[in-house]
Each structure stands twice: as C-alpha cells, then as structure tokens.
Image (cartoon, rainbow over all chains, first blue to last red):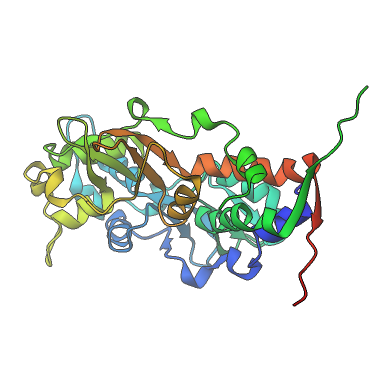
Length: 159
Length: 159
C-alpha cells in the first residue's frame, strides 16, 4: 500500500504520467534490423517497443540486441542487418502494466527497467511510463512534502 | 531545500547511492569506436563514461553517437569503426557532481539523464549515481513514510 498523501504528490500530474502511444517511437515486427538501427540512431533511444500490424505489443528492440544478432565468433556481419527481421531477435520478456495499473506495481518495475509499457486488455499498445516522470514526482516530494505537511514520528508500540 | 525526513528515507542506504568507479564499465579516450561498440554490446549498456589515461572523466559515449559517427548521407561506413578514436566523437557535455554533492542537485539532474557522474575536485572519476538507486528510495518513501510518520496538513496562513 502506498501512502495517500505521498501518492498525491508523486503523480500530481496524472495525465502526463503515461506518454501516449502516438508520441512513442516504435518499430514493426516485420521491419528489418537496418530500419530499427536507423531509428534508434536518429532518435537516440536505447530501446523501443515492437508492435505487430494491429498495433499490439510484441517486444522490445535495443542496439545491443541488434549488434549481438549480427556478431559471430569471428566478426561483425553488417550485411545481415538487411536480412534479419526484428521479430526474430526482439526481447519478448518485457515489463508491462494494464491501463488500470497500481502505482505500486509501476514503481517496483521501474527500479529494474528504463520504462514500462502500458497495454489494454487485448494487448494493444497504449503508451509508456518512464523513470523520468516518476523522478519528477520524487523531486516534488523532496521539495514540497515537509513544507506542506506537519510530520511527526508515530509512537512505537511497546510490547 | 529537501525535507529532512524525506531525505533520510530516500537515501537510507547512503553507501550504495554511488556505484564506485571500479564497478562501472568505462572506455579510454584513445580507444577506437569498434572497441567501444563491442563493450556496449557485450555489457548491454546504453552509454558509458570515457576516461583519459589518468582516470580523469572526459565524456560519455553511446551507441547512437557511434552509429552517427560512421554514417554518411549515402550509407553506413562500418570500416570507419576501426579508425575513429572515442575522443573524436564523445559527448563532452555530461552531467556530473562532486563527491560532496547536494542530493537536490542529483535529483534535478536525474530527471533528464540516466545517470550522473561523480568526480573529485581534480576531475578523477569516482563513480556514478543511477536513476535506479533513487527509484529504490522513492519506493521506500511510497511504502513506509506514512506508516512511520503522522502527517497532517499545515494550517494555511490567511493574509
């Protein structure tokens, strides 16, 4: 359970907590790795969601994953970039929450992941929640909480 | 100013807040881009610090930066990976704090950067502070603060 007053300040701006799907760079499952690499390079993202042709969430693709896919023991085989499809190498073990997520769940997952995918019950990609948004809330709490509220230690129960 | 009780819970484990230099993957200014690319691929980091031969902090290098350095209008010139030195293309405009940092400064910088470099007054690289560590603190505050403290709204001053 998350404290109510903390929660209020943490996600003061609830509307901006989820970055909506139409503002997130994505690639398609059938795209080749050279397309994904170009997108990641141009937009300077470390990792982006992979969607199928119905805009359902399927996985994540990152630059290290792409590079590993084209490396063999001897060398980097750059010509393979135009051959391999994103769905062949994407990471399908991605963190996600549904639209009616509990903030508690999001906070736990963001300790280990740079962003969390939001999907609806049918798996359609709805957006992402980033560490940056939660850190804005942490800043608000750090600066405003004890100015706004009187805080006193609760009495310890002696047994 | 950060509230004292919030701060205490946010960085409860002050010793683990800074990941020490010897546990951080880095590259040297004179390394070629192929070396940096291999390290980023193997360790799955998005970006790593660049140090000179005295272990002084000089910049950051990321996969998008490397890829941009070897792309021209027509094509990706992979043979250039073995020619270009990291210091020619690294990002020298990196966020950093000194060892006696204010947490306030760290929190502000982490909204915009995945990690903050810690250097001493001579510029020697001492470690990094990651978003993940601060998010562990945010989790502690969310779960424990209102269980530990009585919180009441302060009276508003009517003018």
